[in-house]
Image (cartoon, rainbow, N blue to C red; front, side):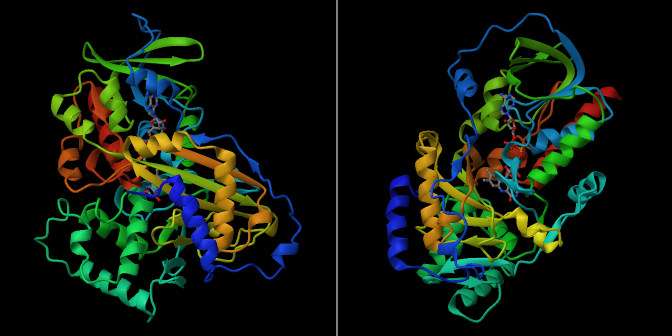
Length: 492
Ligand SMILES: Cc1cc2nc3c(=O)[nH]c(=O)nc-3n(C[C@H](O)[C@H](O)[C@H](O)COP(=O)(O)OP(=O)(O)OC[C@H]3O[C@@H](n4cnc5c(N)ncnc54)[C@H](O)[C@@H]3O)c2cc1C
């Protein structure tokens, strides 16, 4: 199980007592005498999930739908996360409307901005662009900054270690793991065995680090995720990162601009979809906005919501998909963006702390600006902090019950103890809650999700990034491409 809030406070006391030091350091100036003395930074309103309408849908408290459509379009895209936006981009010269429940698009790849630094509320980076992803970046004119894998720090054996190469105990374990992954027997069933089954003979401290890193990625430790997911994680961590301004929210923003630039009224926000039904040779989509309930008839619907929502809004979903979707477990996450008007931390791009530390992953959002020579001191600094909770209903309930002011104060104290005394230098904190952040990649997930991979009928296509198993930018783009092709076939 992941750490709970109580564990967090306990761990906080432990870290302070241990007086951890290491890679992180203050930038020259005497921080304790710094200019910013406010100990109470501004805590912005919650970002992320809001379940007011989602719970009405779950409980069957569904408003009456109009019988007749008040609008038609060739295609309706449900959900404005990365997959829905990419589907819209692929269909940008066609007649479609995208419906997103929140006031902003991007979903788990959304972001914000502080003094000219864009930051992420979820997805932060990707690996080397290839195939569809490379083509998409070219079409959008995106040139992510390449940040070397050397710009990574790891907390293990009671201290920080930088880089992926070195001769100390930590690096010897990491090199051994990389070697074992690269030479793993081809007949090992990576999808159905656990990552921990593969990890024998490693130091306990190193395993603790891997466990927390798996939580940072998947909301579950090495015993709860498949070996395939673990291998993917280690390869991602030991490869260069391709980072847009704002992380992957920069990609979501570019997709939205592509859609809105191609025609008016195509991206409708604050529109909650209640049902997607088969109608004649196409589909009918019921949604609500501030003016009431509406219905749009279309030739084909693209459902780019998480499977759990698809399960509820598509009454005609085949039984085998319903059964598969009902078995998925979702991890809950808090992602905090700690905004500072001065650059206090001269640290690597990303860092991972070992178990039982509650803050598993830390990202400096200004890194792509610095690496590409666009950083100015007045931009300050934004630290993006990932705090995974238990997967399932328990973690979700904890996350939704949090007090944001207390959490912000605890996070700042924790970071001050772990990295550098940032305490009096924080101007604002934005905390994002994700109740259904990621589907935990348990052994067996790929065979469950195989049924939904490329799932398409005459009247609808399921196009969430998770459709093929792993939830990632690549998964979103390939699901979107599949859905756009299904739409184009309807016009042929
Ligand atoms: C904390 C975190 C970190 C991550 N880091 C990375 C990373 O570094 N790299 C990476 O590749 N991936 C990362 N991911 C995975 C990320 O989820 C995917 O990359 C991608 O953003 C998923 O896009 P999506 O469109 O499939 O799904 P989502 O982001 O889940 O989007 C679904 C959309 O549907 C909308 N919606 C849901 N229900 C309704 C409804 N009833 N009506 C209307 N709209 C609805 C939602 O509001 C949302 O906008 C991370 C995820 C999280 C949570």
